[in-house]
Length: 296
Image (cartoon, rainbow, N blue to C red):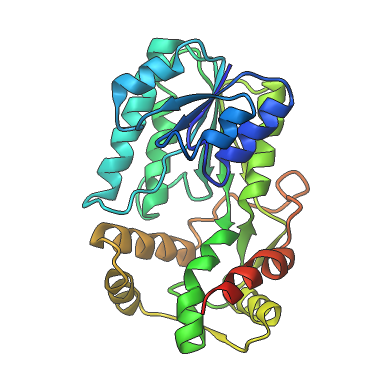
């Protein structure tokens, strides 16, 4: 049996559906049974609960051969790293008690950084903590920057004709679609051929600068807009003004500072093994433009 956390999320639902299609038994971890109904109809067993509930996770992991682990975002918190560490400890306790043998983990490029990468440094904690679970084989998927993150800029583009982060405009960043990440996870789940503790980069089809990515999005929607590199102070004020807690705003600033420094992508080099099919151009035309035009 495979236990999939975040089973209604971008990566989790694809993993669950494809494992079911392959004839595997799947337990889908969801917070809301209604949202998990589509998976249940396809044969998944639903485990309805919260990852912050340690007893729930221990019960859910019983009898599993393999699990998909991801720490979901939570927007109403005061300490992002503390929240991540709570989930991580619950994972470790449940894995130790259940004797699960395999885990595929949604991690990130930059997860080698114990500090200086914002929320991604929390994934350093996750990778390190899983090493304490005896007998567990772990494959960490160190993914690039999600293409879907650009959806969050639609309001700014509509209002001001700009797209912006604190990222250097000429910094090449691997942009990956979450569907591609899920496909990599499924490949490893179907073989379970990994041992010990390892990681693979999941890098999308190409690396892009923010200037290049903005031009591709602008062309796809047929509206001219350009990239602006914000100061950390302006970015923080904008995020807090948009309703994000200070801990999350500070975390994103730290993450982008890590990227700008070069340390975040240290060790990453594009090759055929970490390159995945979905191009940013396809995402822009087929998904971003649709979302953009749906906003008045």
